[in-house]
Each structure stands twice: as C-alpha cells, then as structure tokens.
Length: 259
Image (cartoon, rainbow, N blue to C red; front, side, top):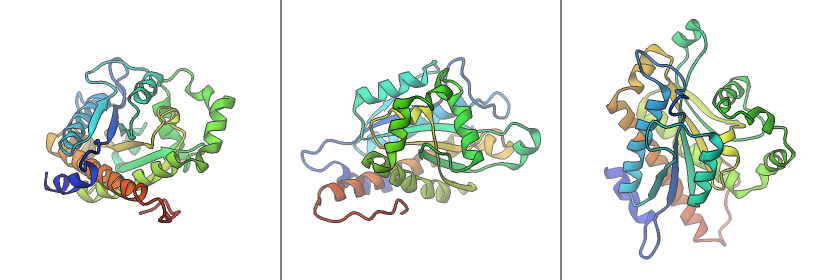
C-alpha cells in the first residue's frame, strides 16, 4: 500500500486521532439490490468492496465502522442512526447500479459518485435515487416533510455539504483513472441514506452490475481491490487537504467544489 503509506503522516500526526469513517454497504438480507450475472447480487458486491475498503483505511490509521458486517437486513433509517452514533468524520455508502431493460443493460456502464441535494442532477440521477430510496417505506413521502425540506434547503449553506462535494470530487476521478470504467460524473440527488448523516457523506455507484462485462468485473476480487484502493486514495487525499485547511483557519478556502 505505498500510496496509502505516504498519506498516513497527514492523517495521524503525533497525538492526533485517526479519522472516524462509516462505510455503508448497500442493501443486505432480503433486500438483495440489483441483479448481476449468474447469482451475483448488489448486496454481495457492496459488502465485499466495503470490507476491502475498511482494510485499506484502517491500515492508514483510520477508525472504520461498517453499518453491516454480514448479509443482514438493515433499514436506511437505522444506517443513518448507527452512523451518527459513531460521530464520524465522513460517511461512504457503496452501491452498484442497474438498468431495467435488456437493451439498456447491454449498453449502460460506468461509475457515478453522488452527494446530497434537494434536486437531482437530471432524470437519470433521480431514477438512481428513487431506486435506492425504495427500501425506505417513508422515503418518498419524507421528501415533502417540512423538517427534511428545511434541511435540504439549507444544504448549500452548510460546511458538511461543501465538504461532501469536495469528497465526491476527490474520490471520483481516482475511481475512473484506476478502474478504466466509463466516467458518468459526480452527480447530486436526494438519497434518503445521506439525508440525516451529520458528516460529509457520499454515495458511490461503483458500476452497472446489470451490464454483462462490467457486472462480471464487479464480482472479481482483483477489480474490487482496484475500486477499494481508488476510494481509499480519494478519502485520504480529502482528509489530508481538509486537515491542512482546518489547521490554517486564517487562510481563505476556495469556493469551488471541483478539484
């Protein structure tokens, strides 16, 4: 882990605790998520990548918590509650994408990285959020709730939201570069699991498990390692820059959310 090792000093200086990170492997138990080739399911891929990612982040000095350790069912609201109990520095939700028709499954592939917004980047982003939100019985109705509406309306003015966009832009290009996957960009959407997390939070769609070739790659250990390394590299770079910024409060911080 040469790249991770060189970033370690920026994360864990003398007397400084490592970052606390929650990784959320999507779905689980009876909620299997999207279907891949053969018997491959999104819930399996998400957990396997999350476990690999945890190993890499822990090796770099971070304290890492998984919302689920096994193939168990966990409600989206429980994932948010679990995360906030840990008081994390950041939150990563791991998923795999899918398309509904045979024609689209054969044509659509690539990686997307999301951060929370009241409005989706487009119809495709809205469709992804609706699919992932479907496991929460009140997810759709909750978007109209006054408390949630207030939170979402206020997002643009919160540091957590700004840092979430920075986190997404730190992770996404590294994923594309390392994996060689199609670049579907950094997107915004109203994901239920990101709504209540009290830390910079992103949701990563690591590829289309429904695509014949990409789905098969997602089931392979070597490719999962590549994805986990890229995510870890992005996370550590984000933490390094954030801590450098926070240690120099007198220095102005650029307003752009792009790298």
